[in-house]
Amino acid sequence: ASGQAGPGGEHCFGQYVGCPIVDQRVDLFFAESVADPLQQIATYCVDPTKPLITDAATVAPDVRKYATTLAVAKPSIRAWPPGDITLVNLPTYFAVQAQGSGQATVGGAGYSLRLAVAPQSYVWHWGDGATLTTTDPGDGPPTGTVRHTYPKAGTDAVTVTVAYGATYSVITPYGTFGPETVPGGAVRTLPADLGLQVRQAIAGLTS
Image (cartoon, rainbow, N blue to C red; front, side, top):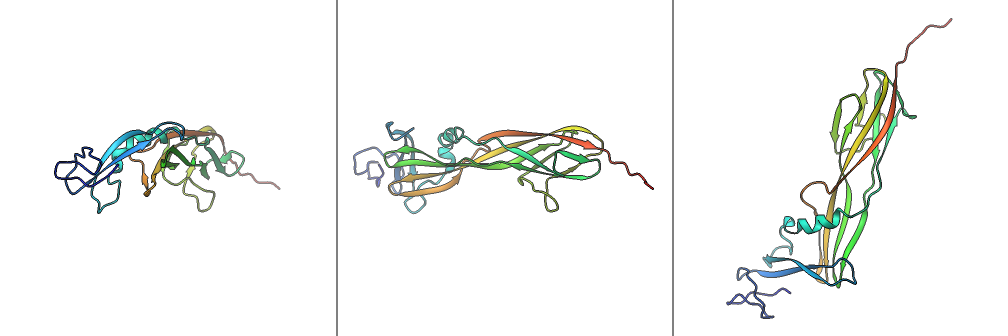
């Protein structure tokens, strides 16, 4: 339903355009599934010389609604040294294992929305009052960048909150537009936790 505006603000189907005379009007439709009817959710005025969707924020509320429904697996934490036991004054390395949603498509009748959700950032709480925010999921020694040194013995509850961002593409009979980043920050957050024993090593002499 797009066409060049005429002198009276009309295009070839006799519909009111409401766009500058040099622009085209594009109506965007979505459906929950192929069996459901299409519903118009937005109208755009587009410069024909530029990409079809010129402002990602315009469709953000509709895209976020779908992105927040995508299922993602619960993340988990690994630590080095292995066995969930570490020593005082020894750097302990951490990594969070968090997977995205893969791709999901909603819509029908030739028009659909392709979405993908993936980990975006991580907020760590080491259990002793210290925290770390990073975009790196971490790795084992010696190259891992997510690490913490405990100053005293005890049992510490390590937690990480994973923030997931989303991207989307609009698929039409006239081409696929995107992927674009869903604006507005994370579409979902999920926690993971690990009970870590911090022990004091004492050196001794033997004969």
